[in-house]
Image (spheres, rainbow, N blue to C red):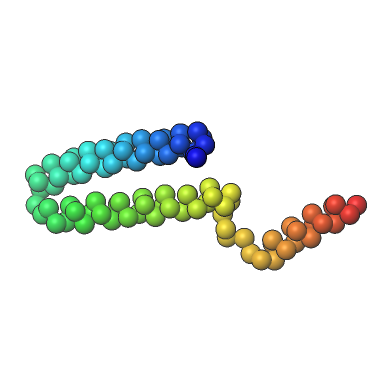
Length: 93
C-alpha cells in the first residue's frame, strides 16, 4: 500500500512532466517556424533542440540527486570527518 503523499507526489511529478513536454513541443514549433524562414535545415533544428533537451535533463537529474542527498556531494572526506569530530566533541561536553 502506498501512502497518500507518495501518490500525490507521483501525480504532481506527472503533471509537471506533461507541462514541461508541452512547453518543449511549443518551443520546437516556434523554432521550426523561425528556422523555416531562414536557411537552416530541419536536421540542424533537431540537433539544436536535442542539445538543449540534454542540458536541461542533465540539470534536472543533478537537482533530483541533490534533493535526495539533501545537499551537494562536493564535500571532501576531511570536511565530513571534521564535522563528525566536532559533533562528537560537543556531545561529550
